[in-house]
Image (cartoon, rainbow, N blue to C red; front, side, top):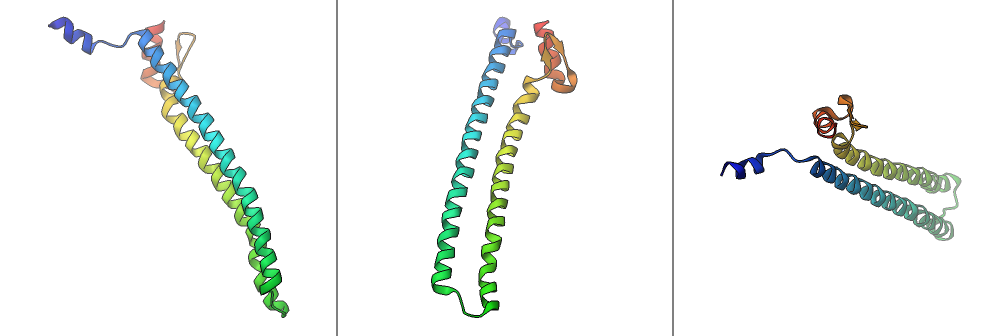
Length: 138
């Protein structure tokens, strides 16, 4: 009976720890690739769709809704001057969002993965986990 409890409470072996780390590294790499594909997809779609919308809207306003007075024309065209700035801002926000996602995911996995190099522990990088792993390996 004591042997059964000792197996359940035993520390994981070095092989188990390394297999777990390998799985976490693979998950991190897959997430990074997926996140990069999604970023390229969203930013890549944003630019052509917004350009087409901009050109069609300019054409419609010019052909049907442009008034004769100069001040009214200026007022009517002001949104067209702001539109590229809005699209640029949306693009920057998307890039920021995807980079934060990657950073957050790296922050979740890296404390568990970093800190051991060549059997030496780097406590500043990995804390107790790195010291434990360095002790297991070394």
